[in-house]
Image: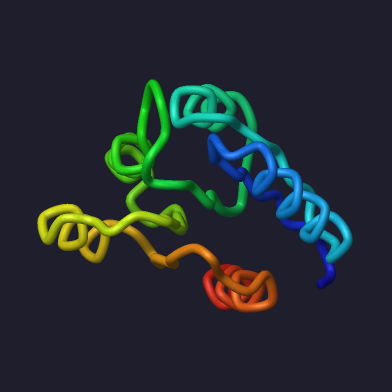
Length: 121
């Protein structure tokens, strides 16, 4: 990877955030962490990112709300949604229509890395 890509990882699970941060840092990415969608949106408004990876269920602002806020103003900005919960048909339709990718937990870090690399091509 020639230039370092900057990821924004939004998840309320501290352990997952840190495991993913370590993995992507070791794989040459610059990674910024947020604990919920509100914090993620604030960081997104102040910094330049190449991609956002966000959990769906979080306090304050969930991942679907974050997705909508980003895509309203930046429709082509790549966003990956991830969840460990079963979602309603309505939420799934919303995700498939708006998100660039959707992944269920648990997932392989290598699979997530390939997904990110494909979206950033």
